[in-house]
Length: 78
Image 1 (tube, rainbow, N blue to C red):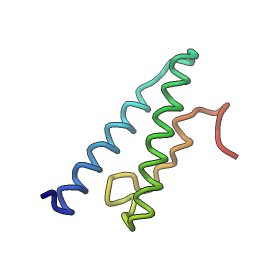
Image 2: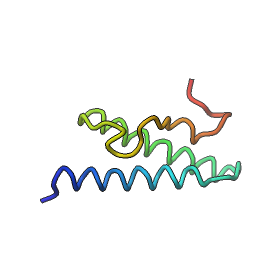
Image 3: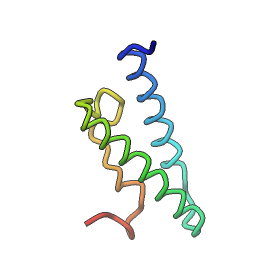
Image 4: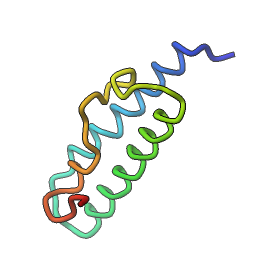
């Protein structure tokens, strides 16, 4: 059975992978805009579920990270 520490390591790896992939998108094409939105949704959902479970963003390497930052200037959340 997976232990809590192991689960946190997996969550951290997933979170960092999603964040890094989103940050590497440098095109403003419609396709890449869709990719950014998908990464935003995935990271936002991950952070929301962590909050419900009492897991701090710092526990998964996302302390201070603002998911809206990957959307770009034109699509920042209000």
